[in-house]
Amino acid sequence: MKRVIAALMMSAAGIGSAAADTPVKLVLNWKYQGPQALFFLAEDKGYFDEAGLDVTIDQGEGSAASITKVATGAYDVGFGDINALIALAATQPDAAPIGVYQMFNTPPFTIAVKADSDIQTPADLAGKTLGGPASDGALKLFPAFAKAADIDPTSVTITNMQPNLREQMLMSGQVDGVFGYVNTIAFSAKAAGIDPQTDLRFISYGDHGLDLYSNALVASKAFVAEHPDALKALVAALNRATVDMIADPAGSVAAVMQREPLLNEEVEIERTKATIAAEMNHPEIAETGLGAIDPDRMRRAIDIVVEANELPRTPALDEVFTDRFLPPLSERPTKVVD
Image (cartoon, rainbow, N blue to C red; front, side, top):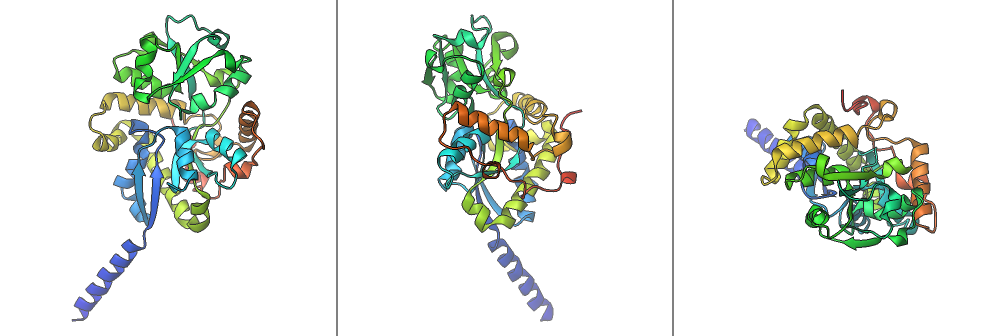
């Protein structure tokens, strides 16, 4: 009888523990792709469960849109563009979320043109038509790019399009160039039978003075205030999964394929490796570790975004990013490629 009672007590304790798991609604930056493997690895390997978290992961509609979705309270945390967060913090400081893990530390923002285009430099964009999804991070940052490249943004016609039409509209000549993240465009083109190395050319924002951070894990002010321990546990779980993804990019993509089997696995493996090697590979991580920032560099980024968009105020650094939820440096990657 004692054994039965003990078993029942253990069972009840288990039920109580499961019921006590903190629910977390998380929105991704985009549709399922290889580099999002870290989120699904954390789920599949039980890292969320070990942390006492009940995480729901939804697809996103763009890196800038994810910031808005967290700001409105639709999601507790999101994976989105820190520059969109800066802009929101400048205009709606009470609503803006805050960055807690800086995943992409090298600017991926670009304008892609056809390889045979007469657009060679930013100055050649005058009189041209550029397109991109309305919530695209590179499109949102075009005023900053135009200022840095010393071109008149009003000389360029901007049109919006559905994300799945971006490469098609470029190659058919409906637009002269398209905004996007370099790896998003390159590998979406590849999946569509376009060779990005021979058919496309990229005008990188980073080559024209915009040394910006990009996508980060961000959290709503409400979640930070009400569930700080859960947020710290979430960041730790995702950091563990990031370490796993870096160690085995090809193997990690299997977690994405389970959710979206229609993807081209080989393309997604290449996309993941390219993302790790480029967007997560700023030299500063040797000192700061992945997930953290260089405060001076982030302050410069804030100034760039505020000035280029003529925003009403300049957010303080601690309105944009906090390191209080990061795991110790010893647990975070300081090198992502050999």
